[in-house]
Image 1 (cartoon, rainbow, N blue to C red):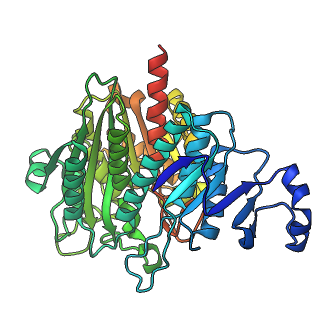
Image 2 (image 1 turned 30 degrees about the horizontal axis):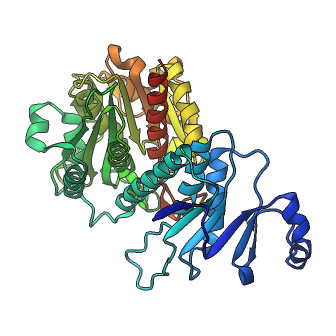
Image 3 (image 1 turned 180 degrees about the horizontal axis):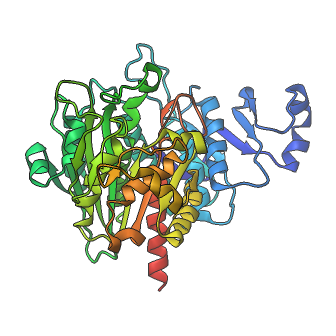
Length: 469
């Protein structure tokens, strides 16, 4: 995809204003267009688009995407889009271009008849400057990384295994000059990563602990991302009902996002040492499967009572977070499709931000708003901590109450965060927007690459803040 400025195009998307309303009055009357949403003038290769007066970056991205989705299957190669500046050239250009490119994504690998998309060029109807070039470059990199993440998440479980994560990590490392370490069962046993191993025990494939590193010269900070990589989750012996098992190919979304983050960060040449850690496992059923009533000793030495084998992601993350802290990070974030409770509480389109440091949560939330993703802070309530206590171990992998499930899962992970890192850690539950079975906003049916953009925009804002000092 190419992005250019102020040139002619095959098709135009024009933002509605008072002058256009007056000029096209008869046409809009004929079309019964009431200046809401879009109005297609196919004869003149134009689409008129009404923007909300209270425009956010997320709304701008989504609105542009909806317009592009209307015309993406037309026989056109270039689209010119009007420009609007919300309050920052950089973010407005990023929002417009990202929305346009993301709207072109479709996962149609297994469809016999594929609708062709011919659009090769997005042209912004404004003069080019350095801020706008930077915004366009960011949009291109994040749209490419998002498509990369979506392809992984959308891929089917019989095709995408723990081995696939290793293969993708090797390819990513080679293409982006990243360091790579891949560990299998023998290493995990040696490191006492028994919680991680228990989840994968019934799988036909060995577990993978994948560690990618991006190391620029004179890095300003060391930032570690940990992703939940359940290539498929049947629920194990606590078997999911059929309807709930469907779409569980998306349980690898956190790990896919972590790959996308380090891919984008390296291409943007961000001045941070970044580590991407993936716990790739498969929660299956066999005579080897771990069982409810088991007690597992984690890498941190914390004993875990297993009351439900379908609360497996937190077990994988517990050992991976332990490993991550050995790197002595300045900032630690995990991304996981951790709980259905998060989706019940926040809906399908919003991720949850959790942690012990409220200032860190607030800062990340502010950055997420500029990314175009939706997020919400869920504060840890100390009264909920008692719900994950066990009578026979240090902690239980499920709560004793049906209420507050997203937060109790976050508190469970918090038990594996050492005291010196509690104020440096954030947990992102991306269970809702990671995979949605309908088109929404800039996203097509399926994977949403949840967490990727908010983490990269967070890094860019940390960079700017440090450079001002």
